[in-house]
Length: 131
Ligand code: THU
Image 1 (tube, protein in one colour):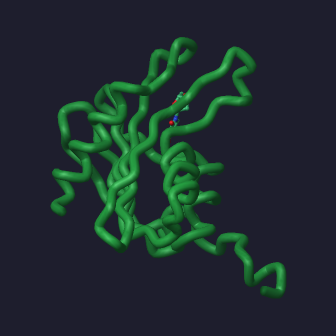
Image 2 (tube, rainbow, N blue to C red):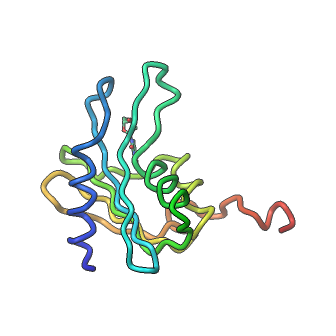
């Protein structure tokens, strides 16, 4: 699967984004090492702090389907800015792979890519718990 294929899936997922408050729908497509792709979208809530980002939505869907091994994630938003994963999503993604590749795509399809370890260096993880 090319980067473009994965971004297309994130763009498709963005159509389901539930964003009546921010008007900023986001889609994510998480590629697993078994080749499957699990998508997610943001799900906002009137109690704004209960909002779930697209990335965490995708991770929860994947884990619920028995998948925990992730290679790449594409994130798609509207507008001219690259949608970077928020701090909470970086932390949740790091639970499963600090070397995850992250593709951040803007509306015109241009994208930038990072390793999660670049975006969340010196992260807190299971080793801190002595595991
Ligand atoms: N959002 C995401 O879904 N992912 C990100 O990486 C950044 C922000 C959502 C949360 C909220 O629904 C909207 O974007 C505005 O913050």
